[in-house]
Image (tube, rainbow over all chains, first blue to last red):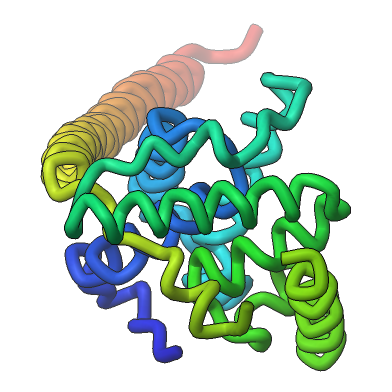
Length: 165
Length: 89
């Protein structure tokens, strides 16, 4: 994934690129559709407010933005104290045929029920990989693991989920 | 279940939400930009004012030094002149 130089960043393009990623990160990670929008908005508001403070030499733009998302997610979970199952979140606003939406909703609900039993790190990895659509390389600095470790853990996690599907 | 299946569970955020958030971000950024411009202008004004005040104080100080120094020279000359004309007893 190529990230534009933030010094001369096209923030509109960054918004268009990352909005669906951050939004789906929270869909995979957390609960309640309304909260997903709220949390997504919070990430972008924080990032936009700190635009001038972003230091390219310290972290890549993706690392910076997803770190904000992770912190927002952690604060949210801490404030709720309990992890509501992700199926609560899946009040999907129709963007396809009703049948397709219903099918996707039930698949995501099922996945949520399965991932609910996973450790927090694995849930985060699943959300970063399949929700945000990040590569293993982009995920590695966010979770403090090597790229190959990310791949190994994800592979193992998906296999475990598949066996229980 | 595989990668493709998991990726397919993604969906785009509602367009109305995306539009509204973008509008809010643009507004926040514009406000911050205006505040930043005002702050910079204020700082520049303070700097210019400070330099001007320093220059005025410096000039005034120099004038006072010159004024104070001048009578001393004249006074000592006068004393010397008086003492030269008066015979010692």
